[in-house]
Structures are given as structure tokens and as C-alpha cells.
Image 1: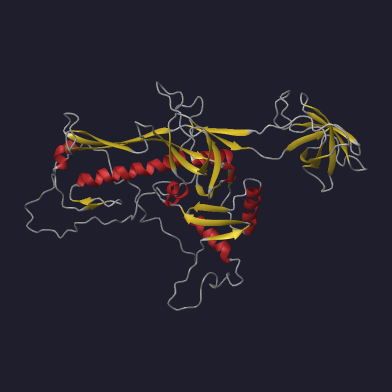
Image 2 (image 1 turned 180 degrees about the vertical axis):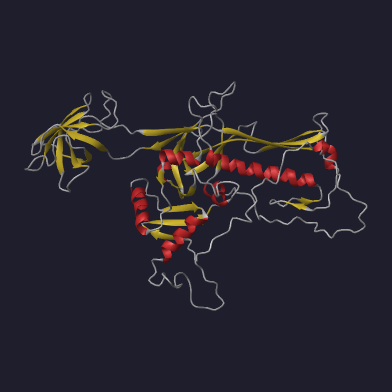
Length: 470
């Protein structure tokens, strides 16, 4: 009988922090009628280990300033020309034909990047592998979106009238003593943009509670310790805010026209384009379970071949996806099924058996690392609808035209732009107000710690990213 993890007892999802009116929190559980002193552990036990989830953007990106409400960048288009929705008005076996370019074009704009004298290959999108021709372009009608061609083959056009084809330019041919190429092509950039959002948080504690000593020694992930309980709450607020600085950049979506956020009662929010949103819109999406065979990874590799062909890639994944890749790689060993010989194993009795892999090479270099954000049960871990199992991120940087610098600049594929100028830096602002804790800004008998950041994530070359969803 197969075993399974039982649902009870489970893991605690209740937040350890709560919003309370601290001025009424008087201690009421002293009992002096009990003469026995309990034996107490002063230091908190960290039963959930490191509870923060931020690390992804620090590993793959960088931060740099921006001084505008709008961030724009240009990405290169394709170098060569190919159309994938082309039909012929001629019948099969015709020596010449008029081809209509049905790809998205603006009639009369001259957007057809084909010129007289260029040589093309025309291939049927479906059917036999022999349905293709080589031809030379004899006329171009940019208004109608058509080109006239003469086929090189004796048998003429191999496919029937109206068959949907693809064509690409592979060269040109001119007669002796003729003029040069008619017209020229202008480089076309693709412009993308994103807007920063303002992220805030606050912690407040009354002056009386700041003067109250505790018997529990508190500690947090960033090393804050002491017997003043407000130190714990303040530092946890800070850690939570730092996590939100990353998760907001991952999850943010733009407010759609007509949505409640964009056209609410007296408020208008714009949102931002987070990493998941951008990759779903302009990147590559794998759905229907994790790729767990070489054949499935080969289809991913084939798609990467059609994109930027970035050699090194890192897959940030959840635990199950990591196991699936380990099992796939282990199965490639002839002794992997039913044995444990794969990996670095020399039958040393003192050596721990390594059942995992850090990466593999198959056409491209793939490295994998666990992404805590996808495993954490208080965040993405354990959800059903909208589940993300991992994301493939290209390593390295790309060259883009920076509007602020006014020149081409090297940028990581994934980086954060925060608002800043000579007088205001909004990367990570924190300030204290009130009349307690050293502050003297108002008559409020409390200390209020404020946190603020204004930032956006730029996903450059999203066509090189892969998101793995259920």
C-alpha cells in the first residue's frame, strides 16, 4: 500500500501578526496565588526557519534608478524577413503567380519588406514535404499587399490555389547591366514600457509599550534580538515589506480598462507589469504538468531555438518540478531504474547518496534551483488555480537603448528600476514619526515607522523566458 502525507496535523497558515489597539493591551494574566515558578525558555524557537521568500530578483537582476513615471525601452526586431500567412492566386503547375501577404500589415504603408529582384522560398504550412518552391520576385504592390513571382522549377507551383504558405527571403538575382536594388529597408525596433508603483507599510507602537520589558527573548531573520517585544514586530514588518518589494514585482498586473481598479469610485490605479504577467503575454508558456521527459524538454529547446538562443538558462522551480527533473536525468543512466548508481557515487560507506542534480546540458545549459516563493504555503505554495511550477530565466545581459542615458546600455534580462533624483531616493525609504523612540515630530504618544518604495520591474527579451504552469 502506498504511503502519503496525512492532512492532520498540518502546517499553520495563521499569521503571527495581527492588527490590535496596543493602548489597551494591559497585562492581565499574572497569578500570584500560584507559588510555583514555571521553567521558561526565554528565547523564541524558530520553528519555521527563515520565513522570508525574497531572493529571486537579487539572484537574477539588478536595481538602477529612474526619474520618470514611465519607463520605455527598445528591443531589436528580427534581422531576416519571413511571412507565415501567404496564399497564391495561381493554380498548381503555374510558372508565375501573385502571392498575397495576409500577415498583419497596414495596407498602403509599404510595410512589405520584399523588393523586386529578391529570391524567396515558399513552403506550404501543411501537407506533403514536397510542397515548396523557389522563386524570384518580379513585382511588388504595397497597396494591395501582393507580390508577383516567377518560379525556378520547371513544374511550376507545387501547391494548389489558396493553400496557406510561409515564405522567407534567402537572396537576390539581377541581370547584367541593370540598376541596383529598388528601395531600402529601415530597421524596426519594438518599444515596450512599464510604470512604477508605490509600495507602503507602517508599524506603530505606543510609548508605554516601548517601555515594557518582556520575559521572551525575541529574534528575527535579520538578527534583531532583545527583550522588548516591539522590536520583533517592527523588524517583522520590515522583513514583510522587503518580501513585498519582490513579490509585487513578480505578481503585479496592469489595471485593465473598465476594471474596478482603473475606474473605481473616486480612485484610479494603473498597476504594473510584473514578471509573470509579461512572460504570459510575450514569453513562452508550458502548461499541462511539468516536463518530465527528454522529449518534452526537446520541445522547449526547439522553442528556444526560435527565440534568442541564449546558451545558459536557470530554472527556478518548486519542489515537485525539481524532483521530476531529477527523476528524468536519473532515468538516462542504464542503472538508474531500480538502482542508485547515477551521480557521483563510488560505493563509499561514509558517503551520502546524492539523488539530485544541479543541472544538465542538452543543446543549452540548464541549471535548476529551488524557488522558495513557489514552495512557501503562505504564498504560492499549495494553491490550485493559477499555480506556477517554475520559470526559466536566461542568464547574462542584453543591450538596449536607455532613454535616460541616451545610449545603448547593458542590462540584465530582469532588473528593477526605482524612482530617484538628486533630491529624492525612493528605492527604500524608512522614517520615524511621533514622540516616542527618539522621534519628535508630533504630540502622538507613539512611534510610527513608515516604509515606502516606488519601483517597476523591466523584463527585457521576454521571448527568452519560459513559465511552467498547471
